[in-house]
Amino acid sequence: MNAPLITPKIPEAGRIDASVRLREVTLGRWLELADDVRVEYATIGDYSYLMEGTAAADCDIGRFTAIAAQCRIGPPNHPMERPTQHRMTYTPEYYWPAATRDAGFFERRRGARTTIGNDVWIGHGATVLAGVTVGNGAVIAAGAVVAKDVEPYTIVGGVPAKPIRRRFPRDIAERLERLAWWDWSHDRLEAAVSDFRDLSIEAFLEKHETP
Image (cartoon, rainbow, N blue to C red; front, side, top):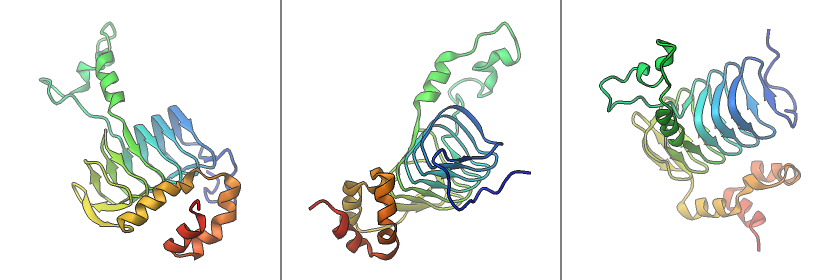
């Protein structure tokens, strides 16, 4: 039986469940990958976490991003322009051992990377399609299918996902992006925890912006 995932303190190396499967992935510090997470050809930034059953491929995930259970980030496309979309055209060796894999197809698939910014929250069961960019501070509602880029600090939802509202006025969002608190050191973040929790957004910015 797996040990509990939620612990009083996540070690610097992160918490990676034994059931997680990784392929050519660069991992940050202080992150968490829960049961049955699958990640390939990706980068995951510091402090981010992917919960149970989430799969991510061909993507770059920023820092402090929270991805709920059963999400799909960067699902691969099939060759719709071909007479058949079946994998036999790009992985024919599965069926005929002497056949050659279509390297060009996989190169194009790897190139359609999905980018998830910093401090993004992706709700349960959401899908972010290949090649989409989700800006810093955005929110993806549960069950959404995101087929177009999402502006920073914008909440989107639905199938296909559409803007619902902004988290903050545009000027506040721009100030947060300039502050880029997600790049602070571990010690500076610890010192500011009460400010994140207790100050209004305006007071937080006024205190921490460079004079």
